[in-house]
Length: 176
Image 1 (tube, rainbow, N blue to C red):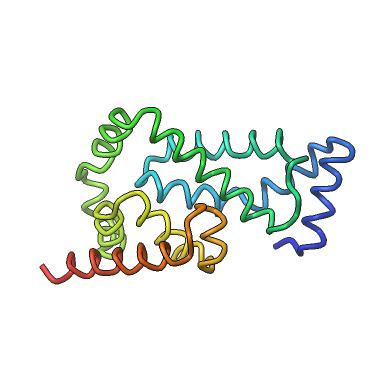
Image 2: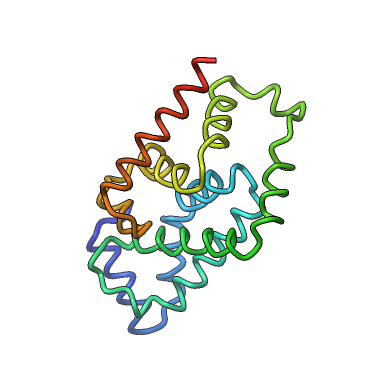
């Protein structure tokens, strides 16, 4: 894990000398978590998650000079990823919904999956995009509400409400 100082040093190298190796190190540091975040947002569509992650890193590289350092690089990067996901869903809503539904049809491999993974997928599927995003950022990525507010551009109160509604929806799934 990079220290804040090491992270800023790598960013400075990217900005000052267009050092692709420095950016490569940032990609190595954040690609796993970012891909996991996008994979959960896309409800397990790994091809779409990979495409969005690639677009996120390309945009981050091209925009690295606009990073002001007011937040952590991870927060800035996740904001780009969230914007990429939101833009994709907005541009091809119908096509994406069909793709997500098709990718979640029950297969032999899913039947053999653990009960916990199935429960998580069912819960995430039951949530709308906003609820799913804040649940993933809060519980899976372990980000505080203030960071989630920066990433999603939602007020903290709205995030708390979304988390509460999501908890209620998920609890109802288990009551049945």
